[in-house]
Length: 620
Ligand code: ADP
Ligand code: ZN
Image (cartoon, rainbow, N blue to C red; front, side):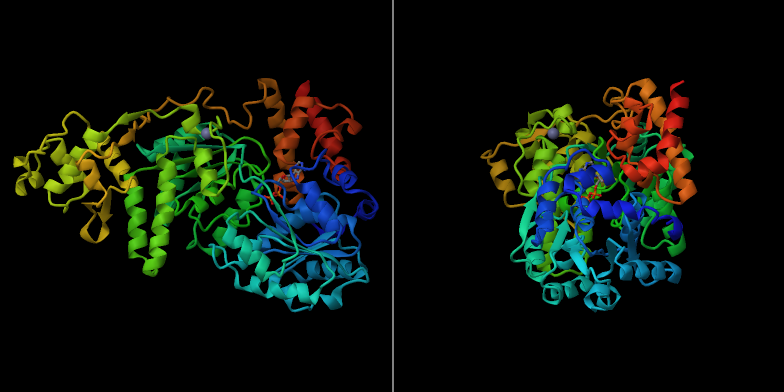
């Protein structure tokens, strides 16, 4: 965060904003031409003094829903946020816009805290970010100026619910807010969609009279690709080729795999850093900072990494292991493309993932009932991996949202999956399990089917069975695929206590009796070089002509330099969308720059000249 002394040089700006209508404020302060989705309606409701619940997916622009009213109303808006990293990021962005904003947290430098408190008392501070406990103690009241509190925003409001994974005990204290400040409008915001969490938020924050605004959870700018694992590292490298110079996240299940992947990527010319829960705290913070401040960094992480990442230009999220549920998958992939530019979600998976995740559930210390829920969640995700329909449609259906399918922006849409009648093959596959006594893992059973003479097939007398070699017409890989699909179809299960032995489920009987036909998907051979056309261009830049792309790179360099001088993240100076608009429209005068989305008054004054000069040099 840069020096506090030069940030509030534009308070006039804030004062002007108070007298204008919301759209004017949006244009002048943020430089955005229009509200996005339901933002305008939400803002109207807040300014009118109503309580509000906002359920928008990531990237739809939730922050603006309270930041903008804060500028239009007298007094200071209090924003409750669960993480210091998030608060600092937002304060940084607001200060760059010329808005007087601050945060209070426990380990803050006293100099910064004194400045914030002074601005609070004088009534200049338009937004104050605090942790929940700070607010609930009421200790803020004595610090407030005569303007009082304009509104209270509860960000990441799902943290109040114990239903999801992000429960924060200190959020429960926020239940008293309504009683403490009955006249102050409360706005709660979350990207968590499920009904249970939503009910919890309303009940626990006493928001019974709140107006609820829901936006579609579809993230149109994110493309989804889920591929079978052949060689995960090569597949990842192929994928990353398109993202040279861009930032993204690669998720792995274990810390060991995180470390190995980082090493391997660095050896292959991709700048990567790691992040997991057990990492030395100083290194963890340094790597997280590097991800915010630098461009073109690949962060390889366990799920420990994510919340608190406000970076708007994360261009890709890759999963080398299966997450635990569709919810986690969507939350993790949702960290890509907050700025609305095309971004990619890529995942590899295989039979082994399903087995491994299943084992983690079975060996965990949850109650049987929770284990059942966890298994159901895993199955739902595997269902999305195995679907032959549009992935976006399958994902949104999981969240109770209808989508007609055929999105054209997922792998099943762009490369439709062929199916085949796998009834006969399934019967053979099931028979091989049955005849070998439901005691063996998938590797051995496939050896039997394909007639492979090994120590084990000889020792158990399996070479003499009728099923031995009965499946020679298919390769071992094809049988792997069939067993994986039988598992997804719940015709077989894997017994983790018995070293991964496959067992028949009751439902298999109908297949044996030929009462049930089985349609299977043809797995795509994943070979190198088989990717989409234009495969080494990032989708975010593929809309740019070659000369525009060069200019974009020059502007990016300028932005990086500015961000280094100020010690702020590049996306805080300007989002990628603004640089792209500059590169394509190439304004030559300062006032023309105001027509570019993302350039408001303050940023024009601060950076206009520099970008104009960079543009001139680049165009010549
Ligand atoms: P969320 O909190 O919902 O994930 P953010 O508030 O972080 O989303 O906003 C995501 C990005 O969209 C930010 O870069 C923000 O500046 C930008 N944004 C928000 N509203 C608009 C708008 N009306 N027009 C253009 N960009 C917007
Ligand atoms: Zn699709």
